[in-house]
Image (cartoon, rainbow, N blue to C red):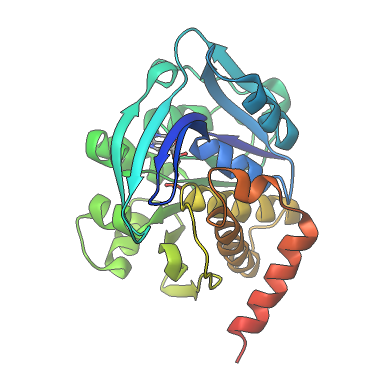
Length: 297
Ligand code: AMP
């Protein structure tokens, strides 16, 4: 079984073509939806009483939501703007709200999960929740600039407790205080994790393990409208695939990173979560096969 823990949000996303206000977002939302095409995950998260029922129904459709708690207060909110090229995102506001004092509890039914994804979330909460599982075979975490800037030590501690770290290139550089991605990955591995996957947006990803690096290009896309959640969809696809195979073999992890790129490519094609909510397994498979042809030489 797979458990995903992290933020469920109401996002305001400002792209050059459209502004979305209070749309369903959150790192765990994207990751859980993406993972569900490989294996239905259990979701642990907190929302406020303002969380719309229609969004709750979306979560229910893709995940086991017995771990989603409703707390007094407002749902976590994120507000970000993209530049004209959709390459850079500026955070305008992060309101933790109910996330701030959340004490996550893993439902009894999820405790046997062997695969655990700690989506972008309070790093101290992420470390705590990891202890609540009986026997984790493979754990993975992500983080974002907000936590690196405000809680760097907790982020490093979290990275020392997991089997793998997925992180985007800019955040890896910021966290490790280096400009070179190989050095950045090595540093993160020195903190204790075995695998580091650096996401490079439209340029794909690099998977590091020991002295090895496995690059995989992004699926080439012409029409991108909203990159939000691409990283989380990447991670969700990756861990969902691993969990569905119940494997942590290096060859499976490499395949999983390709599925990560594929899921990220769907996320950016539509606004908000709708790039991945309307998918089917057959469409994912088809794109995976096209990708395989694309990279073969
Ligand atoms: P990505 O585009 O993959 O980096 O993920 C964007 C998602 O992360 C958005 O839907 C936000 O709601 C969520 N997010 C942004 N900042 C934070 C934060 N500090 N903690 C948790 N989740 C966040």
